[in-house]
Image (cartoon, rainbow, N blue to C red):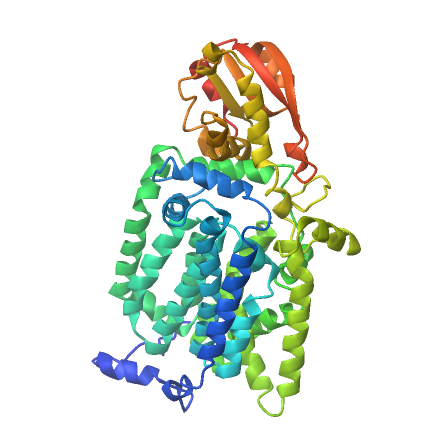
Length: 536
């Protein structure tokens, strides 16, 4: 561990370092890199892009997409439950591509396609030739968790490409012994932190991986310090916002971990989940990739990537994290597994390669309708019933419904706005200007913000997540239309509480089946009462 064999000798010119990096274990990497499947990889990336574009408008807008659209109307350096980048990306998408489902989902589809290409690039850097690069790229397509996450405009669609690109740069740094790669790596880590705080886990695991190998000398370079400075500079706006607002994300995460909806998995169940969300037939590939990175002599230069991946999996397992939090690390493991499979089958192994690829594709085709809206809703219900209600990915504990959560959260939002508008229109004109629409959940409030304008509704208010930061918008509390409530708590605070309608779409989640309440005369001014509404 203390060896510095990877470090350049004193006085060695940089040109010589680059030249030395091209020769690995007696072969010319530069010549081998010409034997790649660039055309096939490009076709695979286009296939993934086409798949997501074709299914973008099948159902409806997703709960979190509505929330990020609301955040995009309140651009800031931070939000209660996420860093700010997704709000700016959503603002860009809405203004450049429009707010149609395809317009909103084009960027995540492109991110998914880029992940195919980046995974092949990692395999190539690990020494993989044409088959390994194509197999690595192909492995991304039938993965249930990627099919799901790349369908929505959320930060999760950009997380895996950011991790994979950062890891590829680290691989290049170690293959060329050039510490100047620390600068773009530091920039990507900073951007990743503005996308999702999980980048901190990846960066820490990456540093640990380098410490545990002969590449640890790179961390003593002045370029590592420069890279860290780049990370801090890019993350600084959000960091200052977090300090100023007393780190609300920590409160949000604490409450999230205590939620009854959170799924906590025992170690063996967590590992089984990893096999399921990545496609059970691909689990042997990523597991082989992990072993190859950790123990293969051929992978000695890249050993840090194995330690990085293992550290992330162990930390998430110990913390009982959500099963999909490990998803961004699998492209690197798929790449390592593809290189190992290529080496194991290079002599008359074409039949094994073909059979394995066909089996993986078949499993992917079976699993795809459960995580991506490839089927019309009626046909999906029949398909789901044929499999006994099976789903390969569970995001939260939810009461059983017609649809799994990932699909249920795309239904009912416009109907909710339409029914709210019917209540609003029955009010006297004099009362409308001081009538607030309060959503108990961020999805309800965001749906009113997105669909309400076409029905003449004002923007909603809520105590949920970042809506609480945006305040009561000057409403007094004299008249409120309350969504997502059972009416019990409302009767404690209002003089009168009247049931005014019912939301009961069969395709929505159980929490979106509720009565609408028209509440009058809040006991205190809403501005004074606002701190009591906070629900993170």
